[in-house]
Image 1 (tube, rainbow, N blue to C red):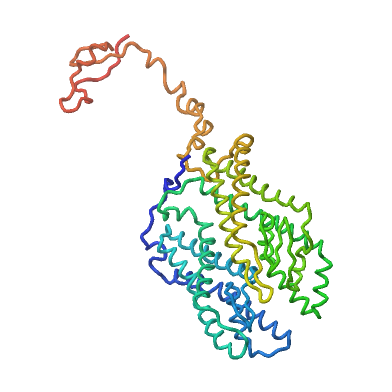
Image 2: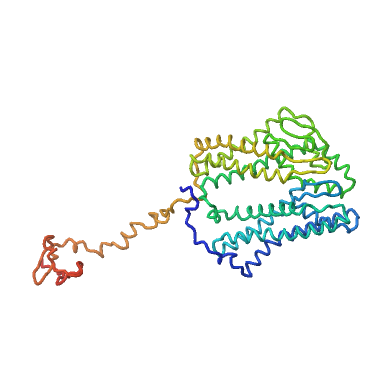
Length: 484
């Protein structure tokens, strides 16, 4: 098996005419959908939430435009200042749904490009430009609206460079996720160096490790909800009415991904900062928390002695990742490199999630995980136990056939014995009644040359007259049947 994915034979790469290099009306329509559809759906949902909230609260519509602009910026995690309160901790659920829409549209655009031929860097630039350009245009409008609305509502317009940076960064992440995960093989040639095969196994193992850590964090969060159910009920008692309880529920669901990222940091042995306090496996420092059901489930007492058992979870995830690398890397001696790749990919992803999941929340201070510590612990938990998993896979678990086999094609299955059966030729083409054995065993076959009869003496055969220009042509010779 080759370690270089660039050795795989592919079709010819077009110079731009097969994809979006020549912008036809059909391709322009695809790019327009990439630029506008996700943004239009996001704005439609924002309109529904803002006007529904204003009608439920019985307030006027004078601040609707400012609320819509602020909601768009909040979906893109842009820090805002409302009155004197700085808010940088925005819910991840709306952001994740928006990025999922963008990634899906980019993947479909890449499929359309691949249907016309191999995608080129120009085509990828067209898709990325469309995915970023549409939201940037909406962001510019929202910044202008926020500036105008500051005279009516207590909303200070954010820094323009910071807002554009958040929008561009999130949209590019969606492009990479949508196009890269589905068409990663089409873009390996864009890399300056060959891509070893074990890198692919490592990246996949790193993605699986992050999903497993988030799944364990979801179970831990659910258990914490059940244990602290009484405190959660107290927050609903203070909601006032049905609409207040519904608002608290929707707000808690929107911030649930943030809580899962923080729970992952706790599982790894790190800390989650809650203003002046912190929460970790080895200690809890109490601090005021927002009165929402999700935060009410955070333990407030001292750390229990059995909490260190939670560290078994990242160790188990690391061993599973090592098993995946040992069985799927294709080359056992290089499986440790795949394990290190998986640990690095998981650390980078958790760093991105930690940065997005944390932020300032007014008087409560900064809420979120300790990103640097969580990333370092993630790398260690997935690298060291992962190597144990690689050894276990090498000793006990044989490597299954690779999902993508880049060896020379094996055509043996197409030429099996049952396809060309010897008995078929023996029965159909070599029947005894068609070919008489006596004809070949007859010693009476002679060669007549210039009137003389010659038997099959090998010494006499080379004396047959041949053409001077063609050694294969025999002159004045014929085969006749001799007399018995």
